[in-house]
Every structure is written in C-alpha cells, then in structure tokens.
Image 1 (cartoon, rainbow, N blue to C red):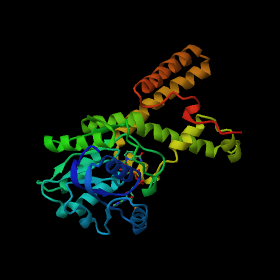
Image 2: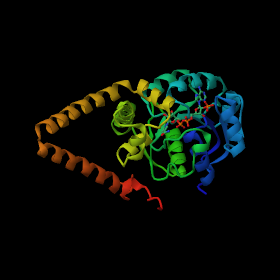
Image 3: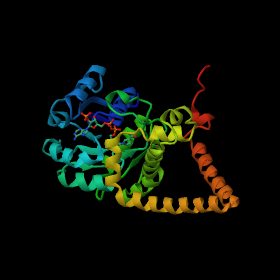
Image 4: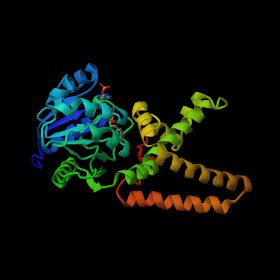
Amino acid sequence: MNGIVYERVALIGLGLIASSMFWAIRRAGLATEVTGYARTHETRDTARRIGLCDRVCDDIADAVRDADLVVLAAPVGAMGEIARQIAPHLKPGATVTDVGSVKRAVIDAVAPHLPDNVHFVPGHPLAGTEHSGPESGFAELFDDRWCLIVPVDGSDETAIARLRDLWLGIGAHVEIMEPDHHDLVLAVTSHAPHLIAYTMVGVADDLRRVTDSEVIKYSAAGFRDFTRIAASDPTMWRDVFLNNKDATLEILGRFTEELFALQRAIRTGDGDHLYDYFTRTRAIRRGIIEAGQDTDAPDFGRKKKPK
Ligand code: NAP
C-alpha cells in the first residue's frame, strides 16, 4: 500500500495503457475511486464485465466530474476532441494528463480547450505490448519502466510532483523532459523502428517467391520480432506518425543514408565497414541490458517449446 495520491481518478479510453494503469493503481492503493469511459458501449461493457474501474460511465462528463486527475488514454488523434468535450465538466484545481506517444501535437491540441483553473501536465509511459483493448492490461506493465513527464509552460510544480508520485506508485521511474526533445527521442527509440518493422513485414508479404507458409515456418528471431512490432494497433500508430511528422522524417532520412552506406559496403565487399558497424550496434544492446531495460536471455527472451 503506497497511500492515496488522488481521491478520484478518471480514465478516458480503456485500452492497454488505461487498463494497466487501473490495475497498478489498485495494486498500490493510489486512489479511492477510479472512473472510466470509452467511446463504444462494447468496450464499456467489457470493462464492466472484467471489473475494470470502480465505475464505468456511459457519459464522458459523468466520468470526469469531481475527478482530481483525468487521464487521456485514447489515440493521439482523438485527444483534442476529448479535451473539448470534458473541459466544461472539469473540477477546479483538477489535473489533466495524457499518456500519448507524441507530446508536441497533443499539447497543441489539448491545451487550448482547458480552463485556466485546471492543471495540464502531459506524460508518456514508455511501456507497451502489441496488444490493445481493455482486456490486454496488467498491473506489472510499468514496473521498472520509464514514465516521462512533459510539463507545459507554466505547469504547476505541485501538480507535477503529485503526478510523479502516482507514476512512482504505479511502479515506474520518472523523468521530466521537454516536449520537442521527447518527440525526437521517441522518433529514434520507438517511432522509426516501428515504421521499419511495418515495412519489413510488408516487404516479406510482397515477395511472392517466398511463400506465406515459408515466411511463417522459417521466421527465426529477426523477422519474428519484426512481426510482433508490426502487429501493433493500426489506429495508434497511424496517429503517432501523423502527429510526430518532423522528428520521424528526420530520423528516417538518417536511416536511409546509413542503409545506403551498408548497401554499398555489401556491394563492394567492405567487410571492415560491416564489422565495425555491427560491433558498435552490439555495444548499444549491451547498454540497454545493463540499464535493466531488457534481459540478455537467449533466443530473444523466449522459452523453448517442449518437443
Ligand atoms: P488501445 O488499447 O487501442 O485503447 C484505446 C482506447 O481509446 C479504447 O478504449 C478506445 O475506445 C478509446 N478511444 C478511441 N477513440 C476515442 C475517442 N474518440 N473518445 C474516447 N475514447 C476513445 O490503446 P492504448 O495502447 O492503450 O493507447 C492509448 C494511448 O497510449 C495512445 O495515445 C498511445 O499513443 C499511448 N501509448 C501506447 C503505448 C502502447 O504500446 N500501446 C505505449 C505508451 C503510450 P473504444 O474501444 O471504445 O474505441
């Protein structure tokens, strides 16, 4: 039990991130009541069936009324419209945060709608899986992962500290970051890699000389890991690319240049270039393991299936 951080929390959007937050908030006893709202009644009914949230509301206004913290956990492209809808019903002094994978575009879309007597403190937990929806969440998702808090100009220090306490109670490590820097860091570490995975899986699908059954049967680590990333939610990722355009395009430009250099090294038989490059990338992998952000278990962390 970590103790109550907010009396009432409202989760808007009830997918992977919101449901994981709910289970983690409950695990640590961080709120007295958590309300929830999702766009479709199917999702709201599923949430009720599995006990997700103390109260699931059919009306977004009922979900946020009296909430001390409102968490926007819908796709990035929907956040502005949600902010517009909830604005008149927010409690004075409440904090509004979000979990969107892009920050500058969300800030630009949400901030203009919020009344002056409400604190806006954007955030982004760096944890996820390729699954989505209310049934995909679990309390441990954020354990030992980073959550970036990305204050806007004039964000209240007390409101920032309180949100930080919530994420610490949820099990994450917290760091403060500036919005444009966040978008560049995430373009490198998440957005461009996702686009590359989507492309690689698309290419394999297009290569008719390799049959579908061969792709599936022989997809050892490498392609198999691309397919896991490329199974991520299409709506979420469409919105990420449309809303983090500049940083993603900058990183993809760099990626293309490096790819051409590697292509040339292969064509000209420049083994030293390839060896040096792969030695450098291997060190980055070691750094990630040493920072506790992945395990060095063999076979990409998968257990062998019994014969
Ligand atoms: P998800 O599992 O696909 O769930 C999205 C939820 O948002 C659903 O409950 C959906 O409701 C609801 N929603 C969609 N449009 C809405 C609207 N206009 N109004 C109200 N609710 C709406 O998504 P997620 O993976 O939890 O992602 C949520 C946010 O977290 C996104 O902004 C994403 O960028 C960010 N994020 C995701 C990850 C990840 O790896 N998945 C990691 C960090 C941050 P219905 O089911 O009723 O349509």
